[in-house]
Image (cartoon, rainbow, N blue to C red; front, top):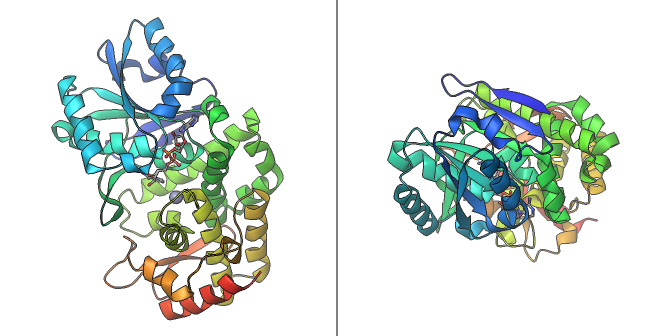
Amino acid sequence: MAVIPVDLAGRSYEVHVGPGLLTRLPELAGPLLRKTAVPVIADANARRHWGGTLDQALRANGRTALWYDVAPGEASKSWSELARLTDWLLAQGVERGDHVLALGGGVVGDLTGFACAILKRGCGFIQLPTTLLAQVDSSVGGKTAINTAAGKNLVGAFHQPALVLADLATLATLPPRELRSGYAEVLKYGVLGDAEFFDWLADNGARVLALDEKTLEQAVATSIAAKARIVAKDERETSGARALLNLGHTFGHALEAEAGFSELLLHGEAVALGMVLAARYSARLGHLPMIDAERITAAVDAAGLPAELAALNFDCDGAALVEHMLHDKKMDAGTLPFVLLRAIGDAYLDRAVALADVALFLDEQLRSH
Ligand code: NAD
Ligand code: ZN
């Protein structure tokens, strides 16, 4: 097992990574569980596969789980689901000093985190991420949110968990496509700040995707440590350090929007292709050697993730994709900062990218093979 500290003044916590952590929950959460009845907000699929394990662990410790089911899917990050959940937490008598458990992927983590941010002006919560994406990304760092008619994640709060237990065993039941999608974010940490990790993934990525225990633990722990370092430097995304985590996300967001945020393109798939596009655009500007852009493309392709925009067969032009970018919540006083690359492992924030030029670049990418 690996333990990664997230150092934040007054709000520090630990992320534990390893197989079988749900079984050890009572021991690892210790005094965070003050009462015998423990509220567990669960993605229905995560509960179906892992609810029994958690139930048993709590029962063996003289406790009971109070289950609250969340329907799988992005639609659960809504005002109505937030209202339903907060009403339920109030009905259970949850107090500020209590800790609510969130079992599932980023949807349940974001919804529960936000509910706990506003419940009685803030109660505690523990993340039990069961998707690779949630383990390496959404469960760490304290961003919580719901979606509204105006867009994704536009209403939310910074609210850090008190503990994160990333049980690697839970990934065994995850659909392979969801696993690969989460792997895109793993790859991202190498590309944006750790060339050595990128090289290591080139050799070990297949073992990670095959869920080889030791390799998987190293990949997840390295990813979380990278995120923890960045979050400790820039918790609220004000200095630009945390913005580097958006590598691949500006292009990716446009692709997701064009696909209507549907199953056609999962978030990680969009980020993977978005990273390729950010790398190729960096190379086009002369900032990144073309060979590095090609290595990134090869890494994305080797993981079974989409690496060619033309292959998506979108019926649109570059200008339409740029138009989607203008609705990105990262828009800042009329400009859109792009995360670009100087090298593998060396990302930077460029606030002076000409969107008309990006549109031309995307036109080329939409046509080329
Ligand atoms: P998700 O929560 O929708 O889970 C993906 C699918 O996997 C769902 O169908 C779910 O039912 C299923 N599932 C979960 N665990 C399972 C398991 N162990 N076995 C079988 N099936 C399982 O998606 P996600 O990719 O985990 O998260 C995406 C969400 O995370 C988005 O809403 C995104 O906005 C958010 N996000 C937040 C942050 C942040 O910093 N807060 C960062 C990245 C993404
Ligand atoms: Zn992402």
